[in-house]
Image 1 (tube, rainbow, N blue to C red):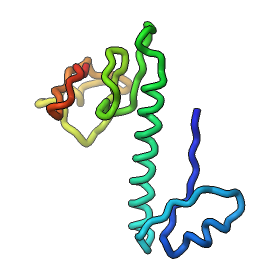
Image 2 (image 1 turned 30 degrees about the vertical axis):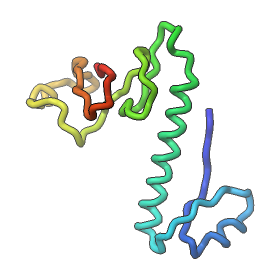
Image 3 (image 1 turned 90 degrees about the vertical axis):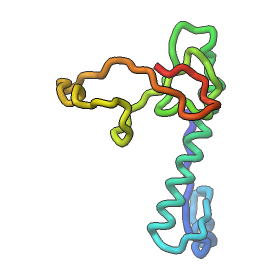
Image 4 (image 1 turned 180 degrees about the vertical axis):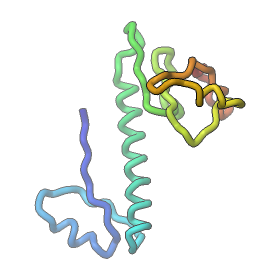
Length: 128
């Protein structure tokens, strides 16, 4: 397990943030107001999370094991392996041409497994 903690603040507040007790690392942003600072903080969080996920996948000894390594979301950016699967749970993307059967599913149910087509020419993994 790895944990990360940091303070994201505007360039104007870096000196103040670095002077806080605890030695928490400071990530600076050129944004001066809360919406921009929040946007940059979320971008930084996504970048750190993606890097940690890549490290976990590359360090996991899944090639010789019987189990699967389940990655939250896309497999793009991960080393291709037959034992690594991505879990799609987005409500924003339409994966089916006809989504009416989804509305008939009882609470707690799951859809059948489906195969997603590659999104890029470099994506050669068979996603199921």
